[in-house]
Length: 163
Image 1 (cartoon, rainbow, N blue to C red):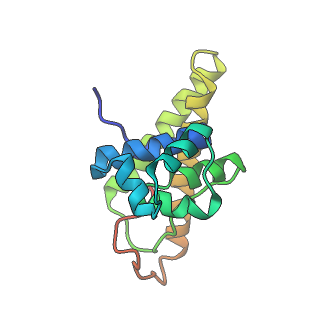
Image 2: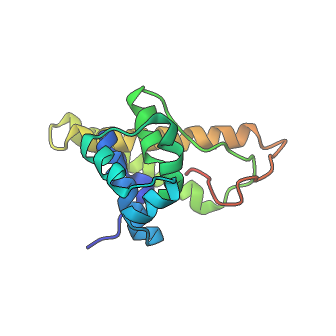
Image 3: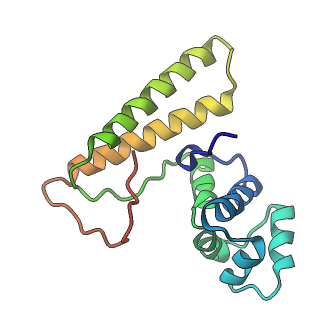
């Protein structure tokens, strides 16, 4: 089975986003649902199971849930559902060529799916995901170029760059 590329995952609903977050936690961080519930500060793991089943998560716990899982797919779904693009804040530092190749690859993939979509040979969901990813990558690079003269500090301690 091919490894999932988590940068390219776009959830279809809140429930799907929650399930994907838990899959990421299990796959990448070796965390069970019980451990995620514990890290969220929930007294009972069945509460989290109920929220997943009902596709409802209290808004005040979205951040805690995503922090416990290690990925922000619920926030990304909410942003995309509101027709907004989400991207990490660029730091204005020079990119490695790998980031630029990733942007080019995203552009090629999106254009290919768009051409195939208009010939009615690929589904709408795949095309939207590829176009959204392309727009987010391009917006991140735009912000990075704008901030190049005065680069910011990397206060997050990790590689949260897009593209």
